[in-house]
Each structure stands twice: as structure tokens, then as C-alpha cells.
Image (cartoon, rainbow, N blue to C red; front, side):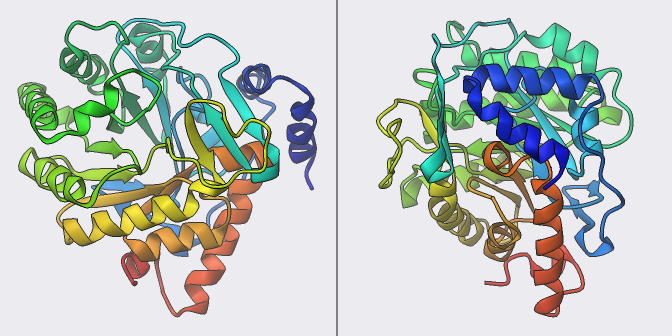
Length: 346
């Protein structure tokens, strides 16, 4: 176990949100782990993005785009910052973040707390090499939530490697209603129109992030709307509002559940999207990735890349190295020469 992993375990004596804030400060000071080069078998291309490896950092960790550089240096193939909203907002009252240690899970009801677009944009403008995405959302009290997404896309155009449209957080009242067909058509239609009006030189992929709590008919409708509006991909999935059997005393807390209990649900939902998409859009698998086997299962189910965050709370910052090593071994064991060859193998 590395010093960084020991430090991560020690953080568990702190309130989860205080521990997270301290982690961001330490990373910003250059005290994070540094990874060596990547195994070539893990290199891949996703919607035109050339990734040194297919394992990404999910949003929520670096909400304000403060430490994407250190996280890339620690071994992630790409980093997604956010969720960012046009105006700064405090989010929901604390406590709003809970470690479910017995379940290797997290429940959060943060509510898109962030510093707003301007500080986020200023930090992204200073980024060096590496793939850094922006996860954009709407302010809780916005009169026109769709306009907030357009504002985020427009302000960060030319600064981010890709955009994720987050309509699937359970912690902003009414946000998930944007996943219904009519609302989604308006949102993606206005975003596509805005993107077409922006300088073509800065054109980058747009992904839609969806919830794991969808019915079969909704999956098909979302895929068709994404395809019709020219988005490049779908990220499956955000946190769940469902509650599988949990051992922790925090099991009854409101909010989105992430971590190990989400693995099976999110991977099953990913498979449903892969079947509905039929290769017409790229899929990225998120939700419950805590091992190379979890990542491999998502790739075989149809994901071209994966993301994780919650598992790092329990596995420490060295987890990304372990996941990549295990994944490379599994790919070779089954005779694959690359990640791309294994996508959708199931």
C-alpha cells in the first residue's frame, strides 16, 4: 500500500466533505501520486478523442476544475470536471455526503454545489495536454434550464475536450424530467443549434449522461433523440435513487447512491443502451467500477471507455493503477489486442 493510499484511509476520520476538500487542496499543492506510462493495450479512441488509456475520472471529484492536471498525472486516461452551472450555487444543506463503508458505497445529495462558469473557464483555459471534459448543468432556480446548458456550452467552447450534458442527477428537483422525450428533444435540439453556430474549429464531442433508473421504452427514445440531434455518445450511468439491500446505517439517506451496489444495475442499463444504439453512438460506462473486472464487464457490455470516482474513497488514489493493470491482464487473457476489440463482445 502506497503512502497516498494510507493517507486516503486516514481521511476516513474526517467528515466526508471535509476530507474531499482537503484532498483537493493537497492535490493542488502537487502532493498527489504520479503514474508511469500506460500499457499500449489500453490506448483507444472515443468519438475522436485519443486516450492513452480507457479509464477516466468521473465528475463530482473535481467540480471546479482545480486538479485535472494532477489527476491526469495520477494515471487517468481522461478527466471530467464539473458539474458546473452558469452561476455559483451553494447546493443542498450539509450533511449531504455519506460514506457507506460496509457497502463500499456513497450517497450524495450535493445539489450541484460549484463556483460557477467563470472560475471554471479560467482554470480550463490554462490546461496543458490531456483530455479534460466539462460536465454542464442547470442552476436550481433557473427560469429556463435549457438556456443554462446552452450558456455552459457557449462559455466553455474551445476550452474543454468534450462536453457532458448532465440531466440525470437526482439532487436538483425536476432535473431528471429532462430525460422524457419531449423535454429531451427541446434540450438537445437547442444545444445542437447552439453548437452549429459556434466556431467549427472548436467542435468537440457532446455526450448525454443518463440515470440508471429508466424503463425499457425510455432507453430507445433517448437513443433516437441523441442520434437525431447529432450527439456523439451517451454516458451510462449516473447515481441511482433505488436502494438495493445495504448494511450501512446511512442506507436511508436521501440522494444518489454510487459505488459497488450500483455495478450490476448500471452495467445492465449499459447493455440495454448498447442494444438500442446498435453502434450508432459511442457509450461510456460509469457506475460501480471498482476493479479491472468491473471495467472489463462494462467494455464487453458495449462501453468504449469507463469512468469511476466513488471506489477511490475506499481504494485510495492508487486504485486507477490497479484497475488498469487488471484490465490489461483480462484483455490479454481473452485474446484481445486492444480495448476496441473487446467493446460489445458480449
